[in-house]
Image (cartoon, rainbow, N blue to C red; front, side, top):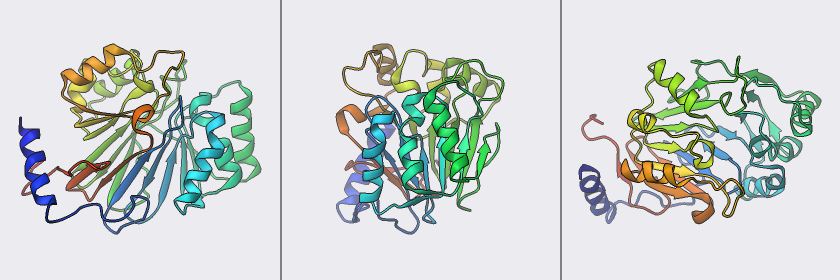
Length: 291
C-alpha cells in the first residue's frame, strides 16, 4: 500500500515537474542512467554514470553484437570506460566480440572463470590483441569510476565449477538508489551472498539467469526487496525462460516486472532520490533523508 501512495504522490508532483525531459542516452548532470538492451536470449546492460563514464555489462549472444554496436553508436557512444564480462557463457560475452572489435574500451573486468570454447578464446584473444587492460573481479572489491557512485562486486568466478555460480554480481548505489545486477548467478551464489551478510537491498533487480528457476529464491527476494525487476530473454527460447515459478515469486513479492522480450530496450533513470522506469511516473526513494 505504501508503494501505491508514494507512486500517487509523485505522479501528482510530476504533473508540474517533469523528470525525464530529454532522451535517456543524453548524459544529464546528476543522473545515473541504465539501459537493459533487448539482445534476444542473453544479457546486456549499459550504465551511464553521473560523471559521464560508461560501463557495458555483457553483450548478449554473438548474433546480437552488430546490433548492439549500432545501438551504442546511435546513442552517440563510440568508447566505453569499462566492459564487464560477467561469466564466459556465449549469451553474455558473445556480443562483446563486436564491441571489442569496433569500440575503444578502457578496461575489461572479467569474472576469472576460464572456459574452453571458441567464443571465449576469441574474447580473450581480442583483449590481448588490442592491449586492453584486464582486471579479474575480486569479491567485495569496489570499482571506483565515479566518486558519487558505489559499485561493489558481490560474487566472482574464483574456485567455482559452474559458469553461472561464477557470474559477477554488481551492486550499484547512487545516493538513495540501489541496483543489483546478477548476471546468471544461481541460488548457490545467492545463498553465499546472503551468508556474507552483504547489503543486498535494491530498488531494481536484474533477475538472474533470464528468469530461470535456478535463480531468484524467495529468501533472496526477501533480502533484496526490489521495487522493479528486469528480465532479459527471448520469446520462444528453448529453455522456457522465464519460468513460471519465478514469475509467481516476483508477483507474490509485489515486484513490478519489465521484460526485454515484451518491452524491448528498458531505460531506467535516477537522480538518487527519484527513480523512473520507462515512462512511468517517477518513484520517490527518499523523504527527508529516510528511505
